Length: 118
Image 1 (spheres, helix red, strand yellow):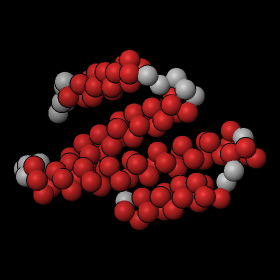
Image 2 (spheres, rainbow, N blue to C red):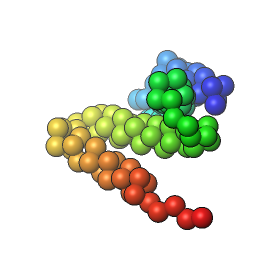
Image 3 (cartoon, rainbow, N blue to C red):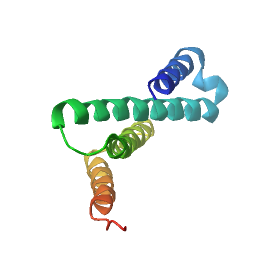
């Protein structure tokens, strides 16, 4: 996962410094946001897993910690990228951000209240 995250960050920096959005149009924006989204997922997932191991000290197996940290990194990365897209379109304001945070919070609550089947 660390190696894939480093590749995603390298791809994002390549897009950032080598592609002119005025020349390529919407394709460059898709590459920019997609590479940024994937690098954020990897970074937040690794950081969340390490925080859970070293600071939270739970007795859960590592595969459950990885699953939780990946899910949280997916939500947080998606929140950041959607907010960044809205900001680039000049549509982001405080109530849009609150609605986004509430939507992701309710989505996370659905995972927390899910019944475990045996």
